[in-house]
Structure formats: structure tokens, C-alpha cells
Image (cartoon, rainbow, N blue to C red; front, side):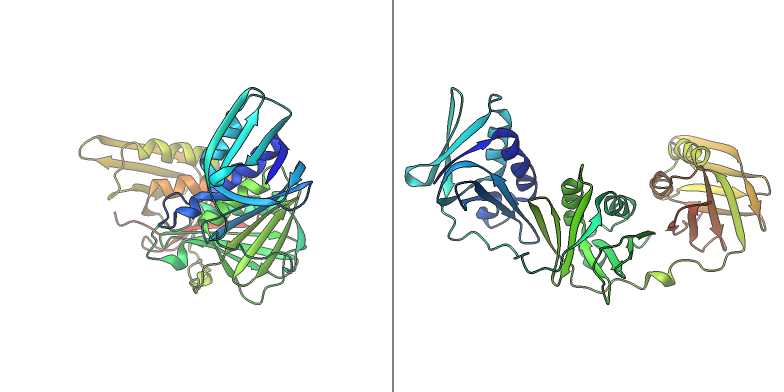
Amino acid sequence: MEFRINQAEFVRGLRLAQSIADRKSTMPLLANVLLRVQSKSRLLVTATDLNVSLSAELKISGGSDGSLTVGAKALHDIVVNLPKVDDISFRKVENNWAEIKAGKVAYRIVGVPDRDFPKVPDHREAPFGDVDAATLREMIDRTLFSVCNDETRFHLNGVLFESTGTKARMVSTDGHRLSKVDRELPGAPKLSAGVIIPKKGLLEIKKVLDGATTCKLAVKTPHAFFAVDDLVLAVKLIDAQFPPYEQVIPKDHKRRATISRDSLTDAVKRAQLMSSEARGVKMSFASDHITIASDNPDLGEVREDVDAQFKGEAMTIGFNPKYMIELLGQIKSDQVDIDLGGELDPALVKPASGDDYLGVIMPMRI
């Protein structure tokens, strides 16, 4: 096995491979990347943690048949730090070692035969459609932050993806907050039921979408496939029932506040400095302003009035400031609407106009 490859081309494949390869697994081989010469001009680079898999076909020259697995992170770090040259040479030598040369630098690293390397999902028969990469990435960004990190609640450890074939929706929740975004996404698969894409898979998908204009997308249970040029990600879907999120989103509200997004964000950030995890931040709604306050016996207290339009009876409600700040960070409009029921009811936060996006935050007792 031997080939020559452009340094930047090699880095492009190894950057994703080393982030997917699982160095903490009880299966040491999952920390490796598989390199297989498919022809004189194509190299297949494969990495997997059994849930997220990468297949990348890279351009090479002078390839001779063969395959080998080597440590993904070690190989990536070596290639990134080699002198800037046009081509790198890679050769499999005795005892499954690999020899890597660039200019006057030569590395020899330990390799492992590929016979026990896991097979990655086959994407060749998946029903791909072309979708806008920027729209898909935006949908991921605006829901990823509210995914549950508690691994015992695995049905919440990803984002629900629903699609009619022309319109798509993503929803995530951790039980304390929820975010939902709807977008026109022609080319997406038509799904009879939503699928749950795990968080790690979404983080890797974002990397593939960087700088891309279009992305090929397919869902073939139990995997979702994402392809950009010659990079293909296969993400194993979470086999669970996503909660009935529509029941969580308030439909009727007695009160509505309209306020500058920046003013509210800054005020909550200032109040957060005096808050604690147990107490949160208090928001008191009146006819022409919101009073944002917090106190901490060990630190002190803060109180700030922020101009706002408010309809309904005055009330006070408590929120986790981190949840409010992260949600406001995903809203693009200058003004936001906060729809409220009672002090123990969830709050609906959304752009005042022009964007099909919303967030729900459960209140804290005050």
C-alpha cells in the first residue's frame, strides 16, 4: 500500500476523522482511522464510533492497493505539522507500520490491520436529495443549545427532525426549555414520522456544512446521511419516542410583553451576576417596563427597569438566566415577544416579527 496526497487534501479528511474516532471506547480500534487505496487516484478514509461514521474519498496519485488503520489523532497531528509541501507520501511497511514523508521529515507510526475495523453504513442506496446547506446549519444552530445532556434521558439527547419534502422542522428540549424552528427546505426527505438526530452527530454535521452551499440529505432508518462533495456522514438515529412537544408550547396567553432583544439580554446578563442556580432571576411585568432583579445572600442584589410594552395584568415570574440568555442569542429580530400565562406557566419567547422560530422556558419558583 502506497500513495501520494496533497497535504491540504489529507487534512480535510483527517480533521473530521479524528473528531469522530472514539479514543475513550473499550474497543481500541475505534480510535483509529482506516485508509484504503481504492484506485491509483482515490483513497477512502473511514472513521466511526459506531454511532457517527465518516467516509471520505480523497484524491491521490500513484496509489497502490492496500489498507491500514492508524491512530486518527496521531496521524492528523502529524500531517498538520509537517512542513508545507505539495505532496506527502504514505507507505505501509513491515509489521503494519506506516511511513509518512514530507520534504526532509520522515515519520514511522504503528498501524493495525483493518480486518477487525467495523463496517460503516452503506450510503450508496440511500435516497439523497439536495438541500440548502446554510438553512440546514441554521436550523441545527438554533436548536442544538437546548438538547438534554443527561444520558439517562436518551430520548432527549438529540434534535427531532420532521420534513414534508418541502418544509422542515427541528425541535429540541431538555425538559426545562424547548426550541423550535420551521424552514422551507425543498429536497429534504418526506418523512411519515419525525426522527431524532443525536447531538454528537449534529456537531459533526455542522463541520461538514462549513463553507458548503448545498448538502445531500437522506434518511434510511436507522441512519441519516449527510454528504458534501466527497465527504459522507452516517448518523445513527436515536431509537426512542420524542415527547409530544406541541403540548408544551403555550397556545393561549393572558399577557404579552414586547421588548428590545438587546436591552433584555444585557439586563438579564447583569442580573445573572447576582443570581444563584437555586434562585434564578425575577422578572416583574408592568404596563410600560419590566423590572429584572436578582439577589444572593453571599453576594448582594441588583434591580433594573427596562422599557417595554406590556398588555395584561401585572405579574412576577422567575427564570433561569442562562436559559433566557441562550434563547435570546438565537433570535435575530430587534424586538421579542414574551407571552405569559401565570407565574407557574411556561413562557413563550419569539421574534416580534418575520421569523418562524420560538422558544419555551419553564419558570422557577421565586
